[in-house]
Length: 325
Image (cartoon, rainbow, N blue to C red; front, side):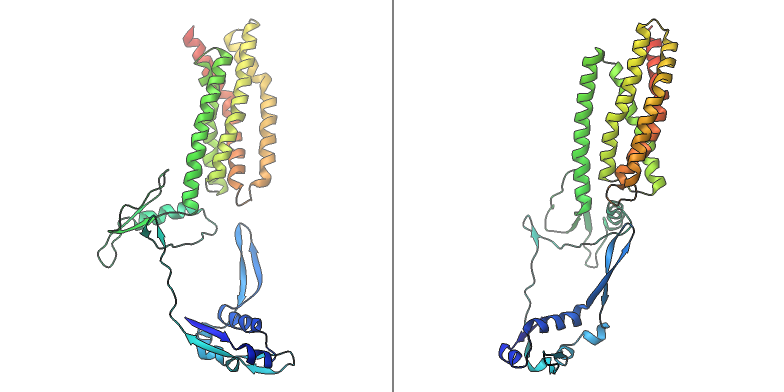
């Protein structure tokens, strides 16, 4: 590497501040940022003005630059600096006592999870020029440690690893929540079968969530998973009200079919208004690059589950009661 040492005495006599030298050399090598370009759903991109590569590739070009002092006089940069060539220290990156090389990149307009899966399929088992095979890993729900140092191995990290950890933790929390919901419903209804019918509305949200992400062209990410978990409580509440009204009508002496029919008719409007409030309230987040998945999950999941809950849950209860008679 080349090191540029500013002669403090010569610089001060010439009316040059060392910071001016650093800024001039930086602008020559790296260019000058004059603004940014903003596009929807994409990170802002800087507008950089700089010379072509051949015009800034030699150290002699830096020494031939001129810098203007406070009196407007041009001072040759080579007269106040000394350029020396030195050996640069190359860092050795390691993780868990294994030598590693980090390759980083950003994916614009697409989810990095899908890009990692495509790259993993392309690189796993690939043969290097030296005959060594490359293996890939760290795409499971638990972090993968390096096997050994006898071959090359690619372990995915970054957003991909973070997403897998989030899905694992959210999935675990969701299962625990389902268990507690079931236990509460068992204690409330004094039945082991009826809570399964009430909770049958939870899988119905998936009927809308996945097609909704496809229609809106939004990748299924961690915020989408949060939306799915949030919908679980909403749809269980709707089916819980349906079942409660059916039970209440049956206590009043209605037949099974009439109780199911009346409960669906009475609860249709409140359930529909609740669904519309959720859908319109979530619509403002659809274009958000982070919470867009949450909004799509809430909108599409609510739409599908509301329609199916009004049909499927009463039918499940009707079939169950007919078989029990």
